[in-house]
Length: 357
Image (cartoon, rainbow, N blue to C red):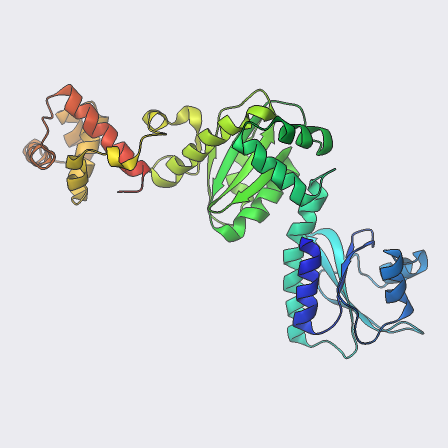
């Protein structure tokens, strides 16, 4: 259905019929056929593929080598055509065909070329979906990530060819326009299924996740969160929850990008389910002074050592003590009290996690 809608939309925009074939030159979708029509186009639609002779003729014309719109001149009984290869990163996935009478303008050729690039993502997903349609596969992945649905896991394994191995879920955050392309590239490199969900993409990986390779597969800057491995696809929802939290840490807390694994989160792992309103009111007040926040966080990270903090911040000891006194006044806490220091430390990390800093 997605391919059919895309073909119909393209035909409406260029004002002429469009036909889409796969890389084997079998017809996948076609628009309403208006205007000039020859026997080749008619047979393609009726039989869902062209004859061997016609395929050989167009192969000889160079359609498999083309990297952009290729004009195929008319021949006896055959109208002139434009063939636009559908490629993803130079992998040939199919062909868009348009009757070239009247001759297409440069603007229309550019429009069809852009549409071919968009169709390539849908075609690649269909190729990678193995025994399932892309839509059915994505529905099953969504149900697996929601948990408590063993039937969805069975569909992906029995019908979709997902290997019955331990799984690790990765969550990728980045510009929407690069997510789908990068996730499909990841699927070309290792066994995985994917889903795009609003502000993030998901990879459900079979066997070793090779998460360190993932950021480099995207055309833009992304961060990746990795959940802990689970023994089977039916428990992938637990790894997904961990990966989702790890990706937030990677995107908001300096030092974790571009890849944060659940096992590496330290205190941020314990804060996974703590809401933003748990941040101490004194820390909320302190956030208006970045200099004092940096001083306090360095002091707490260095176990309350004034000597090490002054050295790290390149401050005179007197200046450090003045800042720490201001912190105590603004937050209403006692920095000599262990419970107060712990509360301040956790509140600072929680504020980072919720994007308050």
